[in-house]
Image (cartoon, rainbow, N blue to C red; front, side):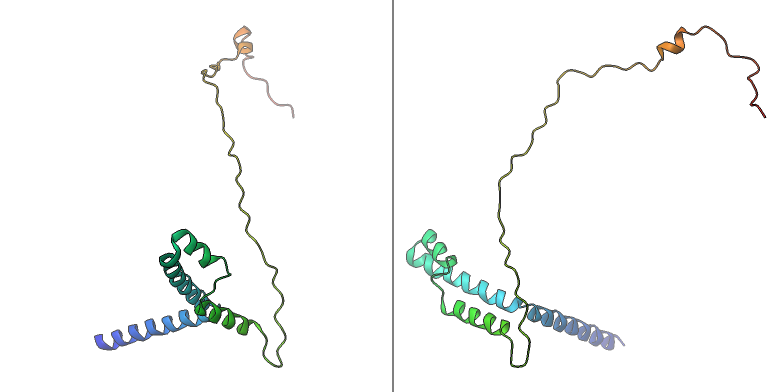
Length: 140
């Protein structure tokens, strides 16, 4: 019985892994992984040859692609072009991220202690009449 549960557990994990892999491929994550590997290789190679600053600059400037970068670009473009009989995908507006430095407001609080407020009403202390006994009844 235990081996049967273990087999079922392994099969469920394998199926889950296949689903995750299929989702990753369907959103194009494999190209991201390949491009990242290409950048790491380029950064190491260019840094050894030309120094760290120049190596990193040439890695990410887009003007010095390695063979793997060319392969990734070709693969991404081939996935984006429609096959015969298919409608072309809608153009996606390219968004650019702009970072801005914004000054953070500073709050200045007075150093003096706040006024103490009285809980006794000065109007109530000035009244000397006693309330009507018995209290008046509400009119019908």
